[in-house]
Image 1 (cartoon, rainbow, N blue to C red):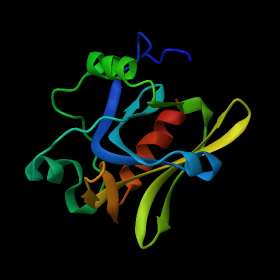
Image 2 (cartoon, rainbow, N blue to C red; image 1 turned 60 degrees about the vertical axis):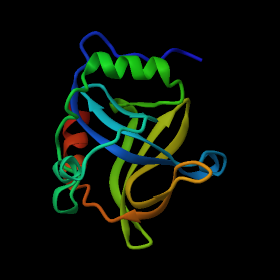
Image 3 (tube, helix red, strand yellow; image 1 turned 45 degrees about the vertical axis):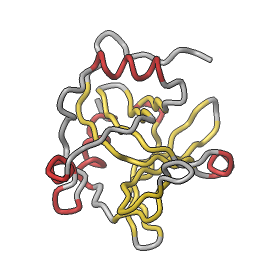
Length: 163
C-alpha cells in the first residue's frame, strides 16, 4: 500500500467537517459509511475518516441555509492534512484528473455529492452527505441524512478539474 501524502505544491482550497463518505457498488457492499473531513486541494479531492466536533455556530458557517459552503476549517492546514493522511491509511485520495463526473444525486429526498472517477481502469463512485441524526451505539453511524445543496462545491471541483 502506497503511503498517501500531499505533493510539495499542493494547497487546500476548501474543506468541510462532519461529512459522511459512502462507497457505492460492490465496494459499498463491503464498506460501511465513514465520517470525516472532505477536502479539495489544487490536485486532489480527499476524504479523511476523522471526526471533528464543531459547535452549532460553526456548523452554520459550513452549512448555511442547507448549502455546502466554500470555506476552510479553522486551525486545519496542509501539514495537519498530511499528518492525517499518514495516520489514516483508509483515507480516499481522488486525483482531480481521474474524476469523470461530479454531480448531485437525490436518494430518499436527500441530495448527495456523487464523485465518479477511474482508478486502475475501473470506475468508482463515492457519495458524500451530512446527517441530521447519528447513532453512537455500537459505533457512530448515520441514522438520517440531511438534504444539502452541493452546487457551490460541484462548481468549485469542476473549475479545479479544468486547470
